[in-house]
Image 1 (tube, rainbow, N blue to C red):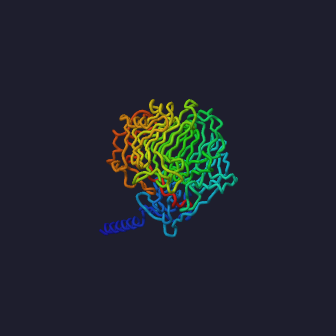
Image 2 (cartoon, helix red, strand yellow):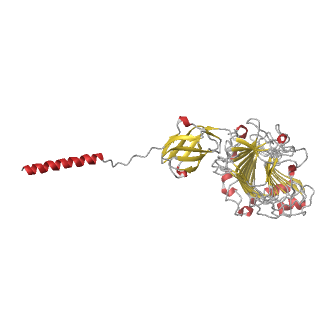
Image 3 (cartoon, one colour):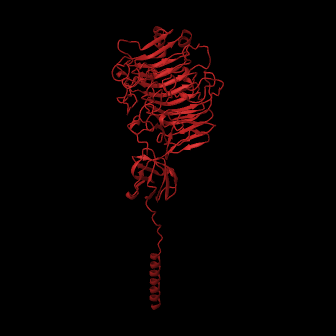
Length: 566
C-alpha cells in the first residue's frame, strides 16, 4: 500500500515538473514588425531626383509598393528591400507627408520627416553637342542661342525634364539667335516622356510674364525626300540646306513622346521665311516616332513639315499665332488625331489657318520636281471663334486676321479625312492653277472627305468653300459637296454638333463631344481610300475625339502660370 502511494506521489511530482518545463518553453513565432516609415533621405529634393525611404516591412518587389507624395502624386519605385525603398520625386509633387501602401496597409511618414520640393539646379547646354548626352529630370536645362546636336550624337531626355529657352539677347555666341534645339542629320533626339511625367520645353520667363516667341523651338533635320534641290537654305538662319539627293524614306531622327513645347516660334526678322516654328521637321523620315506632342503659344506655326515622310499621332496646337499644321516641299507622311484650340483675339498678318498646304513656291511649274506634298491627315479638330460670327478683321492681340480653316494651294496633294472645323471666316480655300490644284481635286490626288465646317460664315458672305485662281468657287463647291465625300456645312449655330460645354475654354478645355453628337455617328464618317493604310487606327467618327480624352494628364492649357522651378 505504501509502495503504491509512493509511486503515485512520484508520478505526480514528475507530471508537475513536465508541466513546469513545458510552461517555460516558448514555441510562439514573434509577430512581424508593422509597416512603417522611419526616415526619408534627403527630406528636400527637386522633381526628378531619387530619394530613399527607410522603415519596416516593405515589399521587396518595387511594384508592390505604392508611394504617394503630397498633391496625390504617385512616385516611381526604382529599388526595394524590406527596409528601404528608392523612389523618384514625381512631377506635380507638393510639400508634405509621403504615404506608403504595401500589403493592403497604408502608412504615412512622421511629421519630423515631411518632404519639401526644392528648386532644380539650372545647367546651360553647350551650343555644340557632338557626343551622346542625357538630360535628367532632377535638373533644369537652359537653351541659349542655337544648340546643334551633330556628329551622329544622341541627345536623350528623361521623363519629367524641363528645358527652358532664352531670347536672342541671351545668345552666348552673340549672333542674336533665340534658344533653339537643332538635331542635325544623322543625330537623334530621344525624348520619351510619359503621361505622368511629360518632357517640357518652355519659356525662361517667370510665371505671368511668358509670351509668344520667347525662344526658338525644336528642329529636327533628316535625310528623307524633298523637292527643294540642294542649295535652298533652312529657315531662320539655321545652318545647312535642303538636299534632294537624300532619299532615305525611313530615316530616324529619334523620338518625341509626351512632350510639351511652350512659348516658342520666334520671328527673327521682317524678312519672309525667317521664322522658327514650335516643332519643325526638315526632311524627317518615317523611322522617327512622334506622338503626344503639344505646342502652345507658338509665335509662328505650331507644327510645320518641310518634305520628309515622318508620321505622327496625337498632336495638340494651343493658341497658335499663325498656322497650326503647315505642310510644304514634298511632305508625304501620315498623321492621325490632332486638335487645335485658337485664341480668337490672336492671328498673324499672313492670315491664320488651321491647315496650310503648299508644294512649291508661287510661280514654280507643277512639273518642276518630285515628290509632291501629299500627306494624309485624319481625325482632326480645330476650334476658333465661339460664340458669335467669326471675324475677318485684324485681331486685337495679333498682327493680322483669320482666314480659312483649310488653305490648299500651290499644287499640293494633301488629303484630310473625318475632321471638324468651327469658327473660321472661311472653311475651305482651294487655290491654284488648272494643271495644279484644279487637276488634283478632279483626279483624286486631293481627297477631302468626312469634313464638317461649322460657324464659318463672315458678315455679308455665305461662301464657306471658296475657289481662288483657276479654281472657281463653283468648281470648289461642286467638289466639296459631292455626296459620296460625306462633307457637311453648318451655319453659325453649331449647337447641333453637341460639343462639350467646355470645348472652347482656353485654359481648361474638354473636347469630348456629348454622347449623342452626330460627329460620333459611324455612318457619317468616311471610310476606305487613303485611310485604309495600316498606320491609321480605325476611327469611324469625325473629329479628334470619341469617348477617350487622349489629352488627359500630360497636357497643360495654362502654361502661363505653371511653376517650372521645382
